[in-house]
Image 1 (cartoon, rainbow, N blue to C red):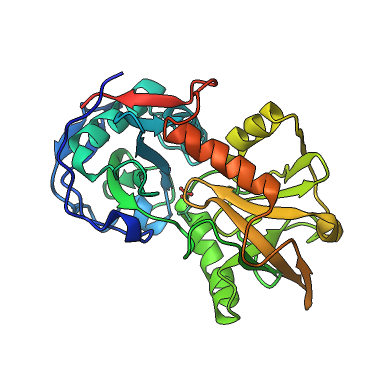
Image 2 (image 1 turned 45 degrees about the vertical axis):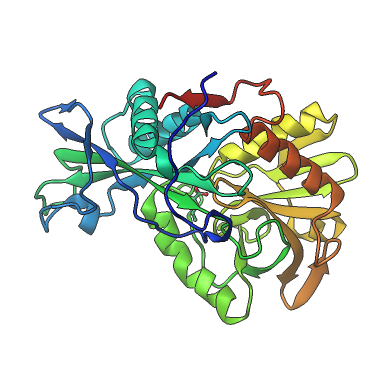
Length: 345
Ligand code: COI
């Protein structure tokens, strides 16, 4: 357990949006002739690449998102980086990108966080250091096929809450006009194309004043899939209910909250969730690394609005889950599941 004595950057930590703030360093690995290079730390924010790179034409790219925190006792920790490493491996496998080992990924996380330690928001500010790993197909190629060369890059930027106001309820709209994923497509992988496919649906919601939209399963348009940015959870009685679907991203936050819910004696159900069931939920949340848990106070479906508790405050179960998760991340509650990985600075 080591307290850091790093002097922090001059940033208004309490008012950070979820945006890009320049930090000092990123780390890069190049894949050529069948192997990854040693990671090199650079302060260059730009990437030089060939205009025929497959990531640009055929979307051969996968990414991740995870966070580092300063704890109450002054340590720097990262939340479950091994889980992100494994999810990236699944994404890479699906779109033919060579594997990145868990060790290489976690080492890159530690190095990029240590190099940017002064940008890890101080304990108690509610902000965090968001880490964005991405891997892209490089080199010149015009015919459809996987790239011969790749770049794996990881940058970090301090962020505040994804949705304005932080842990404040938002209203959601069910979008049926557009899908973000296909039933056996890549909806369960963290690849850029899913997010591009979701932009039109998100804009459709924004135009009607909904900060977040909810997608149904693309085959039957009957079961809840996920929000534009995050997974869906519903609370009913003593149950934590979250959809299982082949077209949603396996959220690490959702997985962790399920464990916390079980710690609380709440029953966790991962199953199909018919949109007709939505009216029976007492609380709803959007969960993900960026969104953490964003309480959802209303869902509009086919011109009918279903409400969940107060529009001003999150419900009791979601509040309890949020507090336990954020306390674990801040080192204020025992890390009994060993989710935190310490970064030596
Ligand atoms: C994350 O939660 O880390 C994501 O990548 C979602 C993105 C929309 C910010």
